[in-house]
Image 1 (cartoon, rainbow, N blue to C red):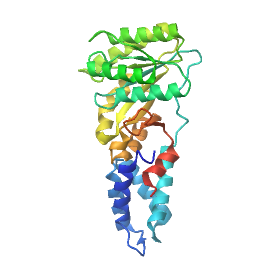
Image 2 (image 1 turned 135 degrees about the vertical axis):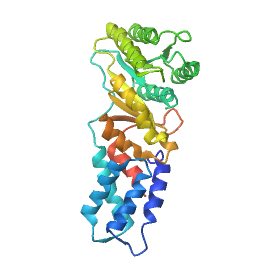
Image 3 (image 1 turned 180 degrees about the horizontal axis):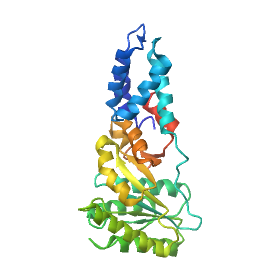
Image 4 (image 1 turned 180 degrees about the vertical axis):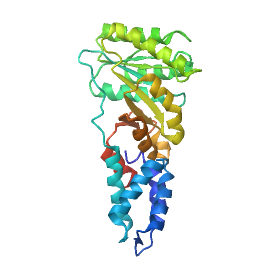
Length: 298
């Protein structure tokens, strides 16, 4: 987590350190205004930045403080804002657990599926992948490579085949092979939200015929490097797909790791995983305390 947030932490610590002199700094309106401006640069948005600034004002106003004390205060407030219920994958009572993964093209969706499949395989689960983004040949090829590296089965369809058909075959394969988990990729972009909803509704219907209550999870992949744009891009997906959790990808490539705060605030969805690099093992279950410390701690 710490390595993944290195760019954001460096930018933040440099910005915040610049507020201080060797003898410390008086926490007054000027200081609080400058702190707010620097927090905004991480793309956390005005709402979360205001909460952190106001908490610092409540605790520290009128005192001369050192950098370490300010970092400790804003780390604690950030952790408080990110706290959520335990957010691992919800495993179905009867296998297979079916996971749909959605997100815009370029968000890191297919890579995140590979990492998630590897994470679950290492935890002892038998996984089947479904290459449901049939309109993008590169996605199918990439997922096939991931499946080979992990050693799990994959179901693919012909180019531009019906994604619902691939989803159905994936669940069927999971049942036939006694797999614990089926992870199904979906189209990254359709022309309109109504098309998206129709396709996802169809996928839900066909897999629901094979497995009760499926899909059990719908994970929305967001690109941390997109900052605030990730929020606007994802809003339609979130509403159309009935998402149950978020995977924040490419966190290591961004100095805008603060975007996780408005994501939690606006989507009211648990962040289940964060992508911390390009390697197959570079994914971690989200933990508020670890994230907050990695974001601010020197």
